[in-house]
Length: 65
Image 1: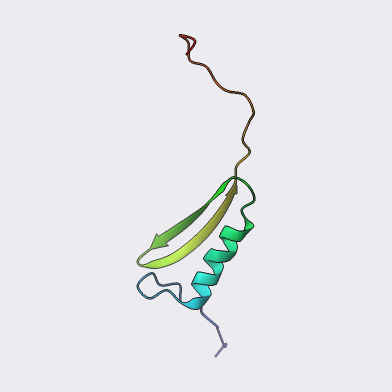
Image 2: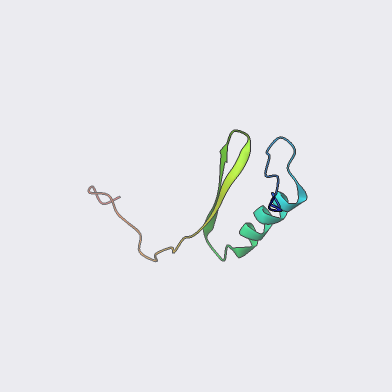
């Protein structure tokens, strides 16, 4: 039988490993960004880091405001 190490990513009792994964994702955000946490059946299935690039232009509406 293979020795599978399975980390518990339960949202009911978050493990230290899960909390570290989330904190690392937050630390990786530089400037603007977001961290998305996907949950299925009370288990975290994915942690996504998104970098956001802000533009310097302001958008105007059709009426000029």
